Image (cartoon, rainbow, N blue to C red; front, side, top):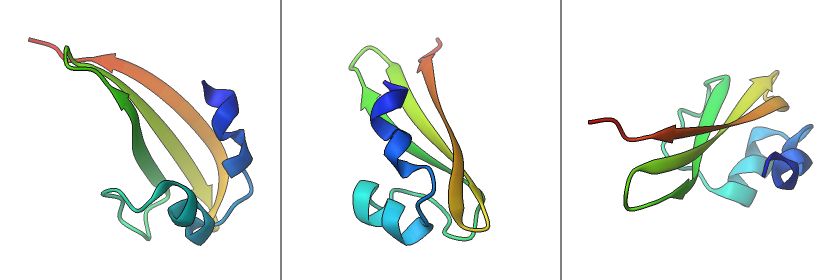
Length: 68
């Protein structure tokens, strides 16, 4: 799943916004998150983008489950 987002590495924030949208990310922040997938029973797949000098240098996908 991570491979389909590797094209974002090296892109600036404007390019990321045009590809993925703004979401609820604070523009000056160095870490942005995007919800890739969510199921009705609480499974979430989140994409984390790490920026250095406003350019993506690392990304990570985290899968979490809603806890009762």
